[in-house]
Length: 477
View 1: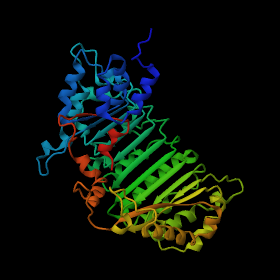
View 2: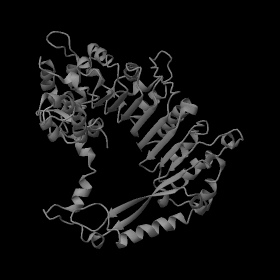
View 3: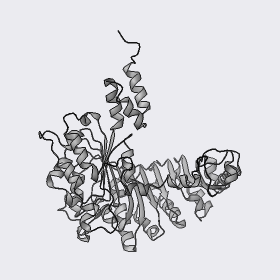
View 4: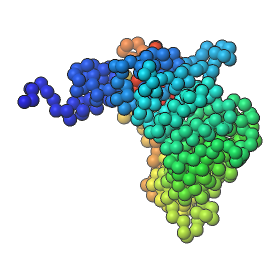
């Protein structure tokens, strides 16, 4: 007979699921009774973060006969080398640390457990600031044992050769998502003979998403290596180009992107590119032909060059997409800096009436407005938004209306989707506890410091996250 204090297991699961992002509360729940342990552990250890200085403790934990990590169904695992003081000798630089090798070559005392058996359902692997030469053959064999891996994210990983990188990708034949940032080859020789048929070209039939951020001089060769892959299943290509110093390198990067786009062909559904510098890249966009990607549903252009955006859109209306057999598929066009550009608005408005854009349901862009002290009167805490009836709100509505008037044909179709963005310019404002509103707002986006520092909440180098994506926060901006 059920005790009056017992709860149905379904209700327990719902309660604990509701607390999925409250780590301290979940820890308490895990101590209530045996039935609460498994659902609490599922959220507590769904994502694990491990740093160089926590490898020993983590191995000891896994080696314990009482360890139950393997039953937590961890889906995301992050390993990153701790930041090293500037000016340290090369031997002490974090790319030369062997923490990942130690972790991957670990075997339990009875020889039955490895990292792959401890994390049997790992779906996402995140690696940060690793020198690939520090991994032994045994360590690389362990990587190949993660058969359920679907997503690989690497940041600041340095390879000696192109073949090393391609071999890593080939280790995960079921890979679906690849994300890279600030990765590069150790020597310029690794970029030679890029079309060498003897290279170990990985075959990734399920790869549908490639994201490359902070693409620059060093990392351009990595993108070139990816272009060697047959990407016939690629659906999403997301690029962030940080800085490329010469026209030759810029042209080379554009050719690489063009290869990826061409390889994807009709499978590509989303193309996104963001430029964070003003340079020669806009002159090279003609090397990227999107007209063969006949299933494109979303295009995102984060480009501040006035003439570049219009020329890209004009090339989409070429002979291939103007034929009677062409079926328009583009549903979303995102040009975040559109309102700041100096272009012929009538030309743009007419261009977007071309048959290529006939299926377009939204044109997204950012509309900005400043807000001041008088716009937040009565607010107890900084919300990042002005009061609903403030002058700043009225200014925003006017800015939205004024810009919409520049594109009357698009507005008549009902496809304009302005994204309101407010900028605080009222100076320092203090909460009741003395903290500075403006400082709080600025610090909230400072992810760069987080990625360079040890985990503040886990001084021993071992941490768990409350959701599968939080592990990537330490390596993303």
